[in-house]
Image (cartoon, one colour):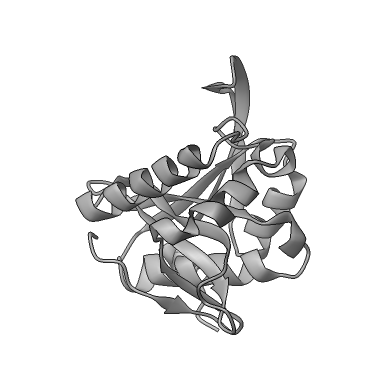
Length: 183
C-alpha cells in the first residue's frame, strides 16, 4: 500500500500530495464550514497544512493510509480537496474513507466522482472486502454523497469520538465488495 498511484475520473485527477499543496489545504481547512464535522480544529496557520500533508504522506509511505489530492484534469496542480483511505485493517480486509472539498466546488458532483474512483481502487486494486465511513449524523451532505456511492447506513454509535473538547455520535456507513457494481 505504500505506493501512490494517480487515479483519473471523468473530470478529475487524484494525485499524490506535495508540499506545494499547503496553501490550498490551508484554504480549505481554515474555513469553519469545511472543518465543522471534521476531527481537526479550523486551521489558523499555514504550518498546520504543511504538517497535515507530511502526516498523510508519512501514512502513505508506511502503508497506514492513502490520501490523494483532488484536482481538475485541466489544472492538475491546483488542489480542490483531498480523499483517501485510513484505518486499514489488514486482518479484516477493510479500510475507512475520508475526504474534504473546497466550498467553492460543492454541489458539482465532484466528490461523488472522486469517491467512486477510490471505492473502485479499494475493491479492484487493494482487494478490500469492506469500505466504511464514519460521519457526524448531522452531516446530511456527507450521508447523501456516500449513499450515492452505494454505501449503506449501519447505525449510530453514541458518543463514539471525542472531538473538539466533547463527545460526538458517529454514523457508520459501509459498502461490501459483493455490493460494489462496476458500471
